[in-house]
Length: 230
Image 1: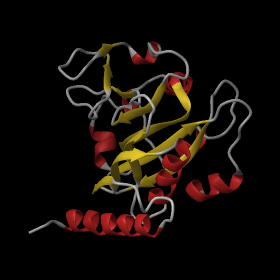
Image 2: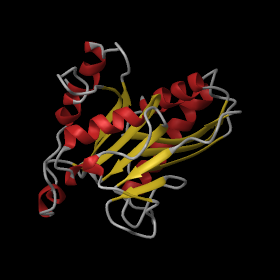
Image 3: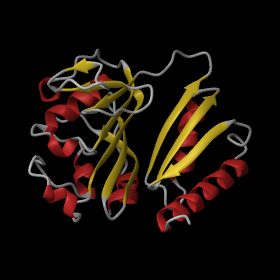
């Protein structure tokens, strides 16, 4: 018999499918969708970056969706460059695994707090799944992620919820994360490269944030900040 979490994910997936069918731009797309732990995993092909952005936005507005981890290919565009930071022995499908230690899933060995060995504006998505809580110099790493991401790229974060025992049970964790922690990275502080919140969600165990780098003179509106943080 399905668990309560599985039933909840199935209900969220049905809601996502319904809103996609009702959207005049997205209804003709052929996409694969599954929801696990409130995270919407989407793959397929779209005609443009604008349609991909709309897809992220529409799915992210469905109640119960905490994050949108899409692996969507834009037609006639190169395959996206995806990094999985601190991946350990497991990494996101199709991603470049980056870790300080050698594991079977690691493609690039690098001390991530010393910088990311990738060119400016060269990466489409960065996954940081249960990794940022282990980072001491978080501001430097976030600036590095901002640097390597393209303008329409996305950082996908998953960290333990600050009130969950998992947040404090591991002595290698360097800090606790609250929803407001992500707000800090969406404001223009000196020396910090800001992000735009696409989606911020939480469960009893985890916090999620899908963040897009703000390049140039772009800023986040107070309305966008209020939606996720106030």
